[in-house]
Image 1 (tube, rainbow over the protein chains, first blue to last red):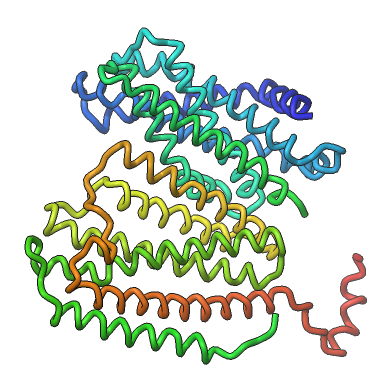
Image 2 (cartoon, rainbow over the protein chains, first blue to last red; image 1 turned 135 degrees about the horizontal axis):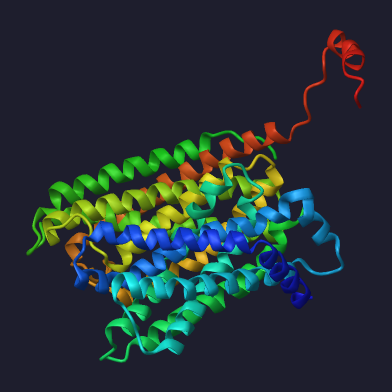
Length: 219
Length: 239
């Protein structure tokens, strides 16, 4: 049932792929703007590249997450979805997995922009992909839960970042550290412990938010 | 929801305030100054009790959220609102006191140490839940969503703490009666109970306000006066 929900959300994302392109444009613009905040010093930009990448992804994620429930609100699609003989948990995991995939794609697409703008390349591409995947999972698990609430509330566009940003501080911290270590070198071998922290956050939030989602959408 | 008088909460808050005045004046004037930090250290007499009670208030909010989800009942929702609000105020006070203490001691207002940063994150996370409550009109949804958000935010606090701890660490060790000299014990204890009583009184008062608001929200609309009622079907007719 999770797979069916995932298929539906992938189909939704695919049919609205112009939206993903627009969010990518937003993320790239953010990356471009961050360099103006620091100034044209190549060394400083390289030092902060990982932080900028994750800030750009975090800002873009609020757009992507909010959009993912926007379509469910049209014609009361969510209510119809919940009437199906499937637990709300399946709806949640399907949507959260689709959001995670979308954010991972977005992160991977933003990496070349970061490399070009900040001269911050890394040869450890599988490691970088892993960190982006873990970080996207960390953003999408609570993000999907909160988007389900804020899409139905007044001023939802403001509320989502307000609720989500303080919560994902550990994701931002550990993902930035891990990415930084990949770009600037990791002489102390600390990458593993940051990845572990990300993994622990993911584990806790993927199980907790899935457990609570039913109470968010029930009438 | 039965309506109860506010005598007990007011009494609790008054006892708390009196204890705070007693403990603080002891701490300010009677207790000896600290060997290295001097008078700056005296902020400990309010800082440490605030920290304990802020955590206590938010833990109580977590318990209320669990009870509200598992057992239901509007009283738990009212308690949840009160506990989060008092917890956020105490956490914000904690940040302010920490900054005031940090300036003369560390030379900066703010430091990215685990406890200070976690407290700031707590203020924003639980403050966000208060904002969420304001933007949801349906009381049933508001209760469920606030409870869910409280559980997620509370579970997040230890992860934030450990991640910031790994990221950077400078704060001095926690102050408990074991780590501070015997001369500092009494004012610290009196103030801890002072803040505890004040907090309990404020939470009880705020619960009462929230419960009364809920009752007026849930109450059926007042019956129309006969003159108006007679005109409504003729004017409407759309139903």
